[in-house]
Length: 356
Ligand code: ATP
Image (cartoon, rainbow, N blue to C red; front, side, top):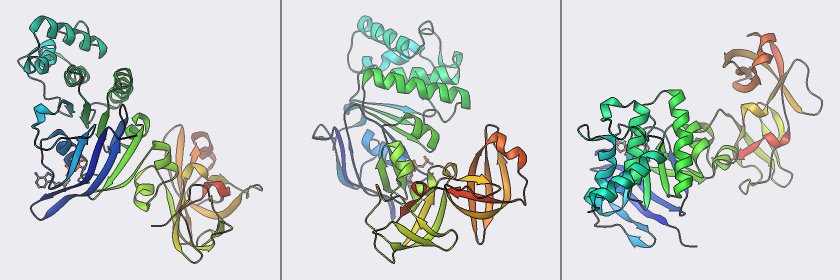
């Protein structure tokens, strides 16, 4: 099937500085794709090029096979929501939402009816006549969302739309945006540097680093089968330990810290004997115990730091030159103290190999 939105070989240079280097991405119709990456990795620049606010230095962008080259932002039929809402302060909520329809020559009566429908969809019926300053941050963001959707865009672009909201409101809005996006089936690109937000909302996460795409995959694949060390490190907590492949056929590696380790072979890249790799073990796949657990592989470690989160805790231990991070249920840390000697236990399935 042909992709709905396609970015092919997109490059962007600002003078000598290369902000985007060969970005290639296919997005399906109705997909919710999140651009995730550290500050300065190129997420917003890519979004701005799709929106038409920036020109690519090289490369092409198409929607349903039609090039967007040469089209001004207002000619692209793309809805955009920014972090700072960018509502017109002298227009009411209803007038703000009506505005893009007015620009498209829609008659007032019909436009206001559509604006009212859209305000209802975002849960703001009854707020139509309020001015932005009379609305909370979350309500203003809903108006911005309604305004971006009212003209039935081909694409919805959301640039850190929840960045200015507090944690609870942010979580409520994540659910709300996902509900509306599903209901309308609008193809959406969401930019964030919050990995929890990316994990919970997306069909696919595109991880950016230094102007390139590191990996584009469903959230659980990005988490459990990262293709690069950068992705493994950036998403979630991780233990990354250097190792050498002893037998690719048997799925065995030698790790100076853990000894001989068997690893998960399913979903792994093709490896060869003697290859230098990194072993990824997520902290929640490790178990702590006073005595080694019989059914597991194990190593001893000394507890260095305990970080409590209430329902769970992160125990950071030392084993020779390496730190090992173990996620434990909150109740379990009551009996642990810094300086304790204990065992860290894992099963072979918990070990994933990374080539870089
Ligand atoms: P953030 O999460 O902080 O918004 P980002 O991943 O969206 O970051 P971009 O805003 O796309 O990053 O920026 C990518 C790189 O391009 C950065 O190094 C930035 O400084 C640079 N850049 C962006 N716009 C310009 C510009 N107009 N002129 C020069 N450099 C720019």
